[in-house]
Image (cartoon, rainbow, N blue to C red; front, side):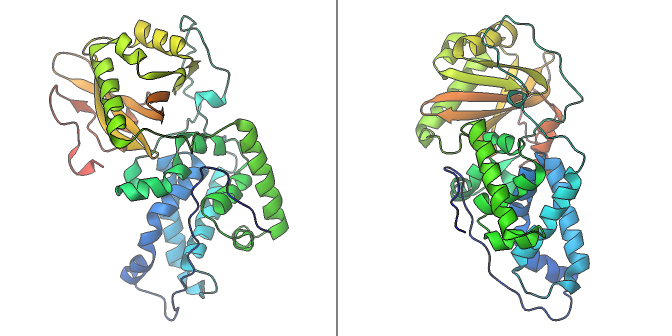
Length: 354
């Protein structure tokens, strides 16, 4: 049965390479055979789990299982197919008994009045995490264009709405373009069951609405001006300048705070009344989930800024359509930046920087 990927999801060709298998390889030989698949396996586990930390642990477990079981790999499928089978089954096992990782927009309706009381943070919720482009091998701009749709925040958040096995089927079929029979073999099921799960998964995603994977972003020059304007407006607390950068239907969410806002008046009103203060914020550009992003530090005194979180922006046309402000200081180090900086100092954290 032939099915097509949903609009905006980048498909990747299946690897048909089958290395000749004789004696078990040495550790160096095993690394030479398998390391090139690590970034895409990490992206796959991230789609499944919604956490870059958990994804890194599962990829490590995948390679350990593959190393230990390489003697049983007889080359009947491609090496890439075999590694994906191990990784997918490891993710499904890890997801047993776990709740999904949502964004605030996945838990309740938005507010359109900035004067509402902000709901207290919910530390017990395991929130969806952003992921640095660098861990997916997106350092090359061409790679960003080819692969970013499969890791954009809206798509990852939509995947979290699916049961684990539907999540696996949809990513293996629609993002990675494995054939139905290949996916059935990976999941120890039948092609009929795979097609049925894929239909249900696509239907559920369609009900969730557009995933922003195919939205037109501004060209490079316009994007640079837009992002520079965003930083300048925050730094100077210039709400009028920020007004010009936001779409009328802009949305803003701030995990781990469940409250989120929709509409330019509500978003700007919230920022103006509670966030924008001259000199309070320091923004440093980065990229997350194939999207423009900023590392955010907050000024604590005349000599230091401390890690505050990460803003990931969705750009639509020449304006900002969504601000996802992950107010989690630990994420700053995850992206390779220093937790504390001095004014006018570089925020990168030496060898840890991406």
